[in-house]
View 1 (cartoon, rainbow, N blue to C red):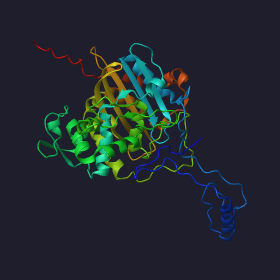
View 2: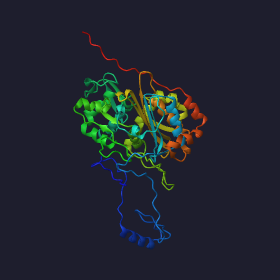
View 3: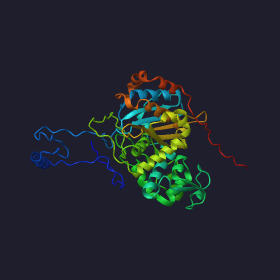
View 4: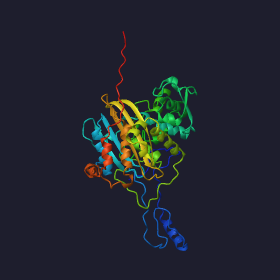
Length: 447
């Protein structure tokens, strides 16, 4: 099992997935001698740790605090989940059908799956890994996560930096991409929260450029020939052919940027978690009790990205769904955020609606969840991805401190359904919050 990142290069700010340490047998004997001469020696530093009180005692294996990553790996036939959360997700999707619905949640610290549910139209709820890992879904405005991170890391922007909007926020015309300060002024946080297309198109064209955008695409899991590890395929982002196409890619206003819900959850976990882009640990990885809590400095970029994520839920495009499914008073004590995206697609045809986000106990980075929800709706109704995600996050908040031992996903419904509380049942009986959607009519040309 290899832990080496297969990419030929890495961005300067990005830490390696896992540092490897070479074995040096001769160093062991030198350090053993030093331990015998110094009464205060605490042990050896390296791949083994020894008891300082007894230098001749057997070595103690170091604690394993990260799940391994296998490149390229393969999708498992079965995987482990939390039984109660999986049962809740299955019941939720069963009660609210759409053309296609997929939901995935993973532990923010360990990366182990907490739930994974898929449903196509009126078919039964399933757990189809080939469906939810396939990079075939337009990423829409989730691409703004990439552009925002690049702007704050490479171009000196901050969440409070002013940006300017010409015209309407949901369109993307060439006159809206002029590098000027004409129009409505707003902070970058608001542009992200309300998913303002022209602002991010201008950032890509006028401040970042094609090379920076594609480098950041690589860092967030696009265009990697060997995949993302543990069997998760890489997303696909086409290189821009001209400046306007670069604006489309930077704002997500294009159907050539394709990804999966698994990749979307990995991107959120990178910024809300330990800063590493890691695939799910399908084998149900558990932290060693000796692992220290996550108290490392999150860094300026991740801190700023979390401000953008929070604004989307508090007052942006996801606020309606969250207020309906997880009211503000019930969120007290939790830190949460995310990003929405929507775009008309053709495979299957309908309105693609995303929410990728996180929730964690305030002040505790070891207790958290990253999730992604994708719904595809037709003209008969629309299931809000933000409402579905908020309902799942609220279910996690009711049991984050008492997650059960992982079980096979095939046995989770029978094991976890008896664990559902009265609050879970009430949440499942709630009517879904949604917005009506109609396909665009083709223009008729008069003769």
